[in-house]
Image (cartoon, rainbow, N blue to C red; front, side, top):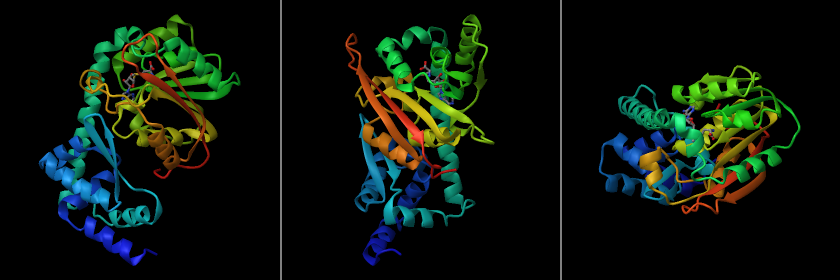
Length: 321
Ligand SMILES: C[S@@+](CC[C@H](N)C(=O)[O-])C[C@H]1O[C@@H](n2cnc3c(N)ncnc32)[C@H](O)[C@@H]1O
């Protein structure tokens, strides 16, 4: 049961056309003001004003990252329950809602195309490029230590790229599957697997934001330098946990928050690193428990990027199935 005052506050904030459209869009996942402005086709100050009101009423949370600001629906507590319940009443066929969802699909598709075009261009040189910002050998040593030597039956590498993780971890899995949406990257990965005579791993073309899962069977899933390509990394974590058996583990390796805005324009990054706070919220929503966390600075690089490792265990099903 909702408390009277809280209900009035929520209804007042949501009871306006643009704000209800914003809430309906955010029900699909975390989005930046830039994407929301493009979808609604309204001025950025106007959209920001509505988002500010929603934030003040406690319906959405705000997360500033460099020049971009991301918003997500509050999903916990009484407010989360109320939002979930009344947004669930929106008619999919409603003209405004349907048009907004189709504009959102186009924006997500354009973001994905930007990443695909970038990786098509850099596929051949990726193994050299990845060393630019990262203390690679220190991070790889940490990955091996964190995962331990106990063999896992099935390993999934989401956004496998040139297959480096499948190569590094070849001795700890019985069967490995690498999935990537870039045909150019997987061509390099396949050549690498065959040169390294790794026959117990398979490379597949696919989109990790919607991989079909009949029966969860992965014991270990790797997301190595992948989550920052998505505006809503939390959604990918939920997709990842759907692939895992209960007790299975997810290793996320990604940048700590930084302010290198050019990585958005030139390298297709959506998020300027991942904060521990955001990761904790996304993991909770995905039913993941944090087991270990470590971070590594690259002292040889001027850009000061820090790489973090998060090891999670699946304890229960995530909220979105
Ligand atoms: C920075 S690379 C990392 C590759 C590899 N994990 C590594 O660390 O070398 C990110 C990879 O994610 C892939 N990727 C981006 N969006 C994807 C999607 N929706 N589905 C599958 N792979 C995706 C890209 O094609 C790229 O190969």
